[in-house]
Image (tube, rainbow, N blue to C red; front, side, top):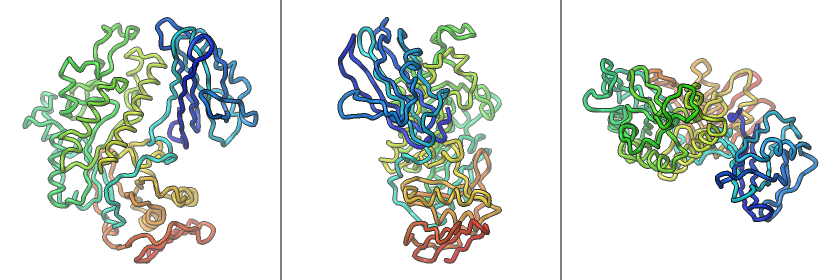
Length: 490
């Protein structure tokens, strides 16, 4: 499913009592392909009736499950399609990706009303995180004090360094997100593949690196690495529960039908490679409420997370859930399609919970920045180019963009144009920079110290066709998409 282009989502649930059992219903509203799971809660029960189904823009009137077909936008075989998938099944998956589009360029819903032959049933819509919705609705804004100071509006994500970063250089940046591979020789013994050197794990090392940076510049925001798909033995909060059999249920285990005939209930493990060869890597089961509580409370907000005075947030790697970087894991585990979708949905809810929780406490998560336009919430939104300048500028000049936490890729070959675009479209929480994916600390650009822009006087305006501008208290920025030129008058 192409979650990255989703522009709107909503989920409403209701339960009433009629027919052979309590009716259950739901309306999952998503921009592109929609997935929902219907299931009967009582063991042995099955879905015995689908009384309503509409893929399109059904009307939803006050009252439980009060849906009606909107004939201006409705796939006419919606009811028979759902019935063919779900009748007499204890659980079924309904996906609209193969259906004809009943109305192009319209946000559509899939609404269903059903009953089980006994007991209750449930409707579960598979919905992406706020990080996968292209800013509609956006993730919550950070609650720390915003800044328009240019050098404080810079961002980088350095990694792959044998020792600590030069704190003086790192502290020049507005936000530094520390990759797991920072100072890997400090916390890892390559000979044994076990993180025991100096009795540290990566988690403690990242906090120490954050302390060094904050000692130079307390204003620099520092994020530390976490992983969503995996629990990593070289991060202490994860290792503590990975090594305790009482918490085995926090992690994905082989199912009875796994193709390798591994004993069901065995924890699934894909050992890490460089620089922690053979270190265990388990897969976190966010369908377990206890696991969610632990990872939010301890891994994210514990002493090696945002409870540390040196840590301002986290980077939730692989936030698109299993099998983002481990394509064989679902097959090896013996997961069914429905089991996988449920797990992904619960993982998305975990990511949203982390973003909401940290944002409410003056911290943040890298994936909360609007990165969906680059196809991966772990990445950074590209700035405009000569070929797509009007398209990008029209997007970020929409007034609603002021409510979107933004990152933008710094183009070292088109610095003036990138900076102009950033200043014209940015909101109160916006960062521009470069240096991702395991690169060393990037070189600081002197341009970021050249301009004291002040604060915005107005929002972006298109002064003429293809020409965008914005005024600040200390000057103005203009970007001419027709000639691919910029003016920075500060």
